[in-house]
Image 1 (cartoon, rainbow, N blue to C red):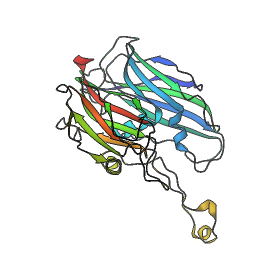
Image 2: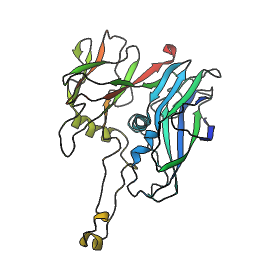
Image 3: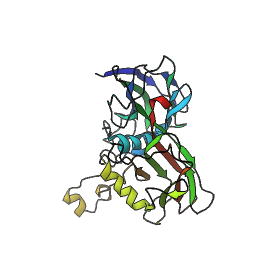
Image 4: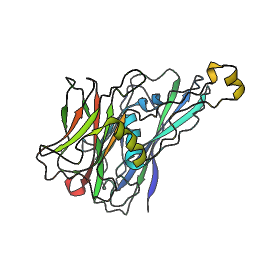
Length: 321
């Protein structure tokens, strides 16, 4: 049995603010954060990236310690890549005064509604949701409101839960560098984001290659390229859907050379993300154990000195909370 309830109902959102909310106390599968807003201008190719950008940081804290700490875009990415959760936004029509909304997933298990992988019961006030909003919203986004809903599993006896927090790194030189991964919990996946990717002008990437190193030796991922990792993640997890608008033209418009009606496909919203999966079958066969590690790193080969984000997806045993 599960209980789906409302935690926050249509609360007005202010740019730059960081409100906090007490969360329910029963074992919890996931949270659903929905942003509602009015699109005030006609934008036929509405920049979807502006919607997750509203969320500068979403944190779930247990007694002040981070369980989840992601920005809106990475929250969207982890929902798709780790939990196969693809939200269907409303009214992506580009028309003025459209009432739009979009839902973000905050998961506590890789399989939603799992009674063995979810957040354990807590006492009132121990588990907190804190949402930090972007300092300035896009000029066509107004009247933003927040809804938060929780899915609890009252009869669950969880054995583990999912922890995802973000590390931020900017390299000091265009050469290989190591980023420490957490030791103690098993790691199911690592999600990465890099500032640059190959484009129409340059063939460079902030994360050109990666390698996993455990106890000072190559481990599982001897070396792999941005291109392969990026293309592979779409086949392993949920297929792209809502993110890129484009136009469908009538032949008469094309024949007339109408520049406003030419097909305009967009890169996927996760164009800068990479997924490094370990527990690819979700059965623990290949999950990355860290309890036998003295050191554990992801080695990144960059083509530039621009920022990257690293999100280890830790599977935490309840006894280790």
